[in-house]
Image 1 (tube, helix red, strand yellow):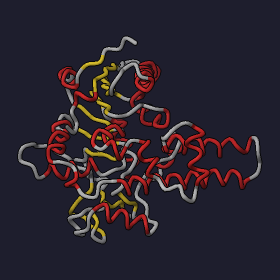
Image 2: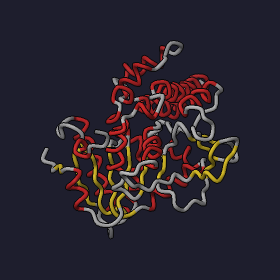
Image 3: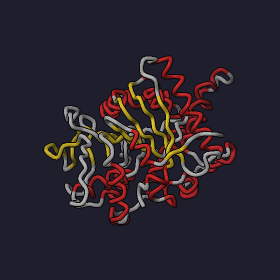
Length: 340
């Protein structure tokens, strides 16, 4: 496969105008692969009371939780065409919901306990990477980006403006409250995050500074009391959109991503079908230059698929907005040196 892949530095040198970044799971894996690789999450998950769910992974030949959730959701949707037994359909839907809960608890259980477990040099390198971008969008649920932002705010050797829309001037029961009127927001968790909760009439963010309790401890306690963070893990892109549209914070983040123009970098994401709702925004939007990270051998099965997915967006753009053609460039993710 003859695909030119340049360095991150070369990619940056090509850009004029605003630059945005979309972070996928590869961002977290690059920091702590022993935690965030799908295989490691699978091996750490507690399936002790749900062995039949665990067997689905081996049947499908995957460690990807969202892929299994997608199969369960699609099966429950088409099943009535072949079997009218409502109990069977409900069983599939229940297993899908249970697997989402297992995924959430696994991420939370494996997650580093303290921000100090990330080395100072790693925060610095991540800050040097992030400071290249005007807006930061992430599809990850973990706390790594949030911890990095908090670390950078106290540094003198790097200056970066990060505003997630949660205002310290507003509090509810000790938590920081999100404001839809914060027009300086430039950090968005597109699929929610472990530290963001829907409190009914308010969106709130767990913080250490307001409670004195470690963030991950607050989240683990919330899970034990059946209080769950904003967490979009639906299997299909359509179901993810349903979840997004029913949450004010998520829908605002989605609209923000839809509005961006200029240059978009994608780091650590496969551009896969289960995030088609995000890819559709790129295809239908005003982004002129798309830079996609490639990790390792470009001729590997996974990378060939990523390159195909990226190139397909060029053709889709012609259908949506032919006056603004989409240019695709691939860069080596290792050259970005995001964490080290």
